[in-house]
Image (tube, rainbow, N blue to C red; front, side, top):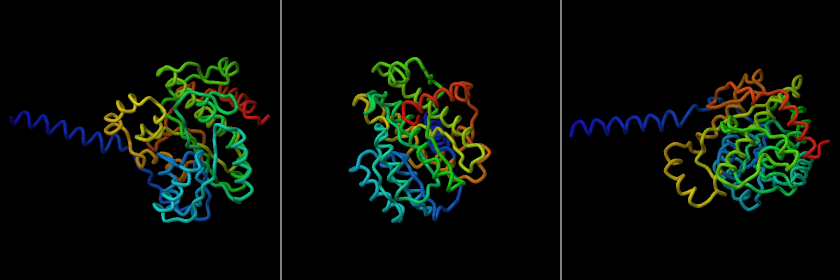
Length: 318
C-alpha cells in the first residue's frame, strides 16, 4: 500500500511540475507602458489575440481589434474594454480572405488613425477552402492577407518608429515546404482534404510566416521598424473549431493537460512586442520568449525572396 501511495505521489508530483513549469513556459517580463502608442492585433476576437489585446490595452495602448466577424468583433470589443479598464479600444472589420477587405481596412486605418507602433499579425485559420480571390484559404489568410496588410501599413510604421511587426507562426513550420509549382498552378500550398493534407498545408503556411519575416527584416534594414516571428506554444484555443466534431472531442483531454491557456500562449507575442533591446534580433524566430535557431529552409534567402515576389503578384502590389 505504501509503495502504491509513493508511486501515485510521484506521478502526481511529476504531472504538477510538467503542467505548471513545462507547459506554462516563460513569461513576458517587460513592464513597458504604451500610452500614446497604437497597436493593431488581427484575429483579436478570440484566443491569444484577444488576450494579447487585453494586455496591451492595460498598458495604455490604443488597440485596434481587426476581426472578420462584426458580431464577434463587437462582443470582443466590449470584453477587452471591460477586462482592461480602457476606453481606447476600437473594432475595425478585416477579412483576411479578401484582398479588397484588407485594402479597405488599411485605407480606413490610415485615414482615421495618425499612429501605428505595433502590428501584430496574429489571425490564423486551420481549414481547407478558397479565399474570395481564388487563393488556397490557409495560404490566403495565414500569409497573403497579412503580407498585403503589412506592406500597406509599412510607411506609417516607419513614420512612427521605433515600431515592430510581429508574425505569429508555429513550430509546425519545421514540417512545412513551399511548393512553388503548386503555388503557381493552384495558388495554394497543397491539395487534398484528408487530415494529413490539411495539417501539411497549415505547416506550409506557417513556414511562409517565418520566411516572410526573414525577408521583411532585410528590406527594413536602415529603418526604425523591426520584425519577429514566433511559436506561441500549443494553445487551448479555437483554432481547431473548423475540424470535425469527433476530432474536437478527442482533443479535449489532450488540450486540457498538455496545452497552454491563452494567457500563457500570449507571452511570447508580448515578449516580441514589448521586450527592450530586441532590435538587433530583427527577423529572428522566438519560442518560449527566447530567440531560436532555424533550420536552413526557414531562413533560405532564395526561397524567401521568391515567396515575397510571388506574394507581391498575387496580392496585387505589383
